[in-house]
Length: 298
Image 1 (cartoon, helix red, strand yellow):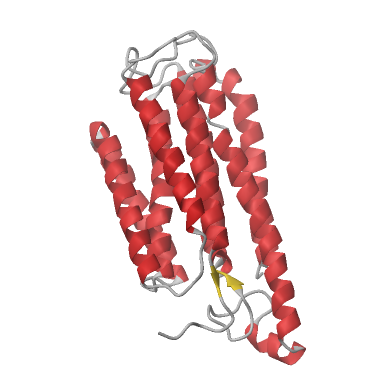
Image 2: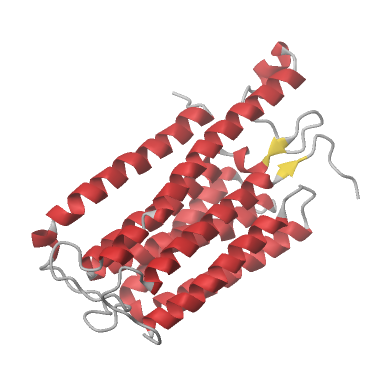
């Protein structure tokens, strides 16, 4: 059965809502399960500033602040649903019913001579992967800080890689180097490789993420130089400002240059919220990209 975009996006929203409810309810009740697991590589003295609360949730502030990503993921799926419905209306107003039977009621090739189109809607995979990747960062970061176990650490970094590789592979797809299927296969292959590398070389996990972000930004700059689509770059600037500010706070918190371990206000929690804001601005950046009805000719 062929699913229309609203069904796909509402399915993604349902996954995030249901999964988040499970995480919130299950985490405090599964302490006896994960206490026997191998600890994270930071345990017990280098897991950021927040003091360890030996019980159900080891780092409450760092755990619950992670859910900011989940709310951003939910918003992405809601916005995708709204935008896909609006794009359908634009298409139906611009084409005859007979033409719609041939072209499809939901999507057209980018650069259609009649309809302004949102690039993020040019494939179901793009928005679906973006929304889930952002939501997964929140889930697995919460699990990591609640348990401080190696498996949680692995999934936390794996989710961050999911978002970083999306930025990279989506830029390549928008630049014409990958089809929709190629996007999916490349995305899976890159994340599989990164997952293996961080399992065998956990100390290199942050360096790998830094290299990935630089590659992703480089690919985005390249894509913009070769595209005739319109996009609001101010959203990317806002995302980068949030990310740089968050990194500074993360560094101070990690090295405990300013640290109040028993305070509810934690630097790493601020890192989570600022990075969630950066993900929101990144999504706004992608939503702003559109191809005009008449392609620009150089």
